[in-house]
Amino acid sequence: MAEDTKPLAAIATVSALTASMCCLPSVVWVLFAGSSAIVAANELSNDLYYSWFRYALYAASLSMMSVGLIIYFRNRGICDLDDVRRERKRVVNTSMALFTATVLGYLIWNFVILEIIGISIGLPWEDSAFWK
Image 1 (cartoon, rainbow, N blue to C red):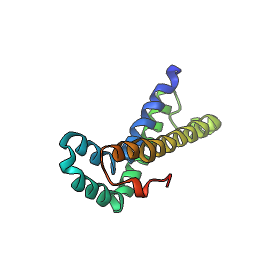
Image 2: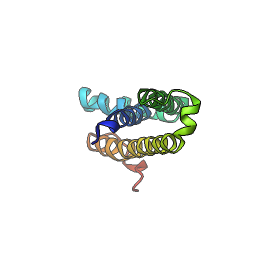
Image 3: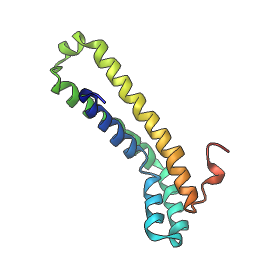
């Protein structure tokens, strides 16, 4: 990976993990507490996923991406709107690439990896899995 894209990869990773915090705590809870916590962990993930909290996590993730992009471009000499206009293609392409990578990372992490881990440790998520 090029040295120039490492900060963007970190931003995408942290943003995707933040967006998936409605399901990750349940998996971690069952991993550490064992099978006695399955019902409570499932309730926690349902409460977090089907409430306003999920949208708050999406907003936090989007905010993190925005602030990360501002810092990324300022470190590369794009500091004001005139610089953004001059480097419009670079700014738009980089922003879209980061957004796409974050959304794909979130979808793969949350709806494939966490779901498979959750099902394998006993969480009752198999009926609502996207592949069914």
